[in-house]
Length: 284
Image (cartoon, rainbow, N blue to C red; front, side, top):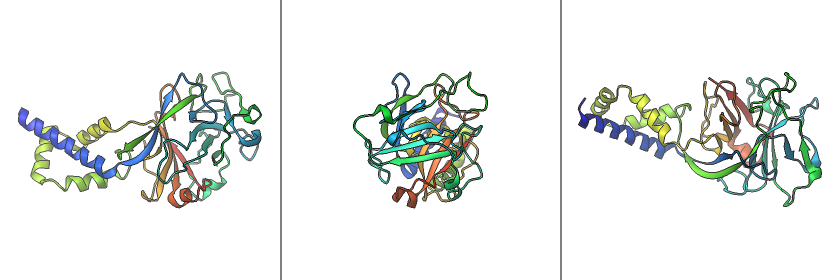
């Protein structure tokens, strides 16, 4: 392989990735953990053993078992088109071995899953009342072995810093392949063949370059989901990412480096109906 051929092949890989980013990027809010900042119970945070609830009423399953806060989003800034622009979105999970996830569930049956909860509170007080703080026992290394959490045993929650990003599709989504094939078809087949000869595995080269230019958001509202096993969606345009929570070494781990997604149908989101959110996670 000559240097000229190698440079031309790398340039084509970069151009393919540029077009994938152009054609598939969706707006999202990325949340960066601020590990040294304690959670603001009226703001953006992940994990912890306390949360704000109107009148101090705890969120529980049908049998009265407490659900634990996974993440909370303050919807005011930055705002994301089509998503709530005020209030709080609260995400709670169970303490069973699957963290409240029913892998056999669909959007309709999720309404009956009381071992997880997605709650939208449109009005938020300006001052936090101590009487409305729900405090839960920490689940750590010395806790009841029947209680499970994806969080690290020494993690007690932290604040999150939000930012708007453009999120291109990743190869973990079924959307990637048709986008990729469509873009490949825009080039002369002889050029594609020469590039494959130069880089060895063109598919892998494109995926590696796409990973390199992607924002790499662990916690996110909007954009594209991430799956480690298989894409569970049937309609990419109708099923939106309400929340993506990826494994993050200092915070939490879904099984073996997995990722959780909370998906919502477009019509439900438009109506601010969060009773049918599909909660799923998988791992390597």
